[in-house]
Length: 562
Image (tube, helix red, strand yellow):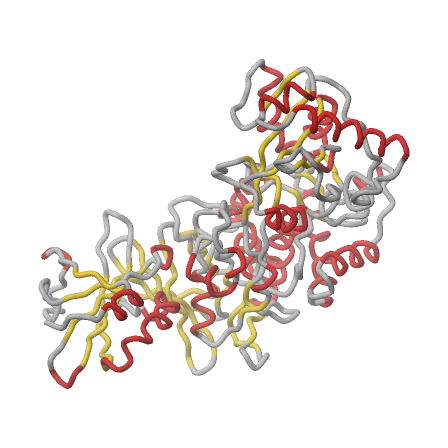
């Protein structure tokens, strides 16, 4: 049996494995348990590539194993490679799900296939139906629905709404456009920004007409005006699911799309695995990819966002880049990987995106390990994340008082989960509380005297109306007056920067058609939501994540029906 050199072994991470007898299909007798090697691709890719050594003609047989639910069975397919190409297998593994062409045992025909059940996918299905498409199926690889949208903060950024007018907020589409382009570092596609502003308001008005209303409006990261409308994300997602059900649109959970099907240059369906079978879903109008980002796929993060290596991720568990991998295999291009950045404001050891607070936009300050401020706290939380990571410290410290805590719960209702326990006499382990600034600094392990001096200095800046050290003039991006920190008790939360999503992805045109590397559209292939690239640019503006799912889901569904 061939033995790999240390170089080969270190580059390919090859291990000898034993294949259980019951996992060897009868129609593939070439699978011998004592002559197989495993190329261990990242677990998030969902595949293992098994190498069988063959003496004949110095060949290697490459068999892909595609994981299915625990009570299912793996599926195999053989491919012949020559040993001289074997070292390139590491690059080949990047497109492993597309390579995992498994044997389909049945086929279903539909008018339109939507992959992903978050807000983007559900809105695409609803929009397509409302534009005349009838036989639609939504494929969801997880056993639960909702994707990242279901665990979002519920913010939707919209301009010129009736709610803004009732609250005396003067806002225009032009101002919103300027904010998005500026915060995007002029790297975003202006046409996509214009479409977003128009389409997200249509979705906002539709939700309102159906009884789904925001509870509040806030000015957050990247906004010169309050326009983040705060919805209850659970209520919104339940509503979208009800609308899908009312239209009798089919949903299949536990069904993972692994390959796009093509006729000529047109996408005509997907190949998917579900429990013990594989299915070819054929489509008349094509496919809408709404599979979210790729933050949970370390291979893709290494490829498109190597600058985020070592930064924690709390994206939805399904954010593995499935749609991006399939589209790239079919000729699509990825745009904006360099703009993947971390967001500051997460408690230490976060488990979900709910372990996050923007309380600095209600007046809190951010300190380093020395008890000193190091950044203008009104900047977008992506910029704050960059500033924090540049300190090279394990965490920073968000300091605020009782009035700021209460203001934050009013401003951002989802923050109640973090800050309301104190109203019930609880002491959450992720934050310290004490009656004086010195006492809370001591609890947090900081120098009490230096922290007290820093708070006094900051309060003096607020009194004078200017911050000569870091230039903070507002609570958030030019909106809201600064507040003194002087109402006990006082709080300090150790905080870090985390990647909650990728917000870049497939390059699309104004119709949300996925573009080839030549910038020509791939016929029959559309993308919506986080999987899209080109919209955000350098910075993420609060409320445009869920907003993008609503807006471009609508656009993709409409255009896919034409």
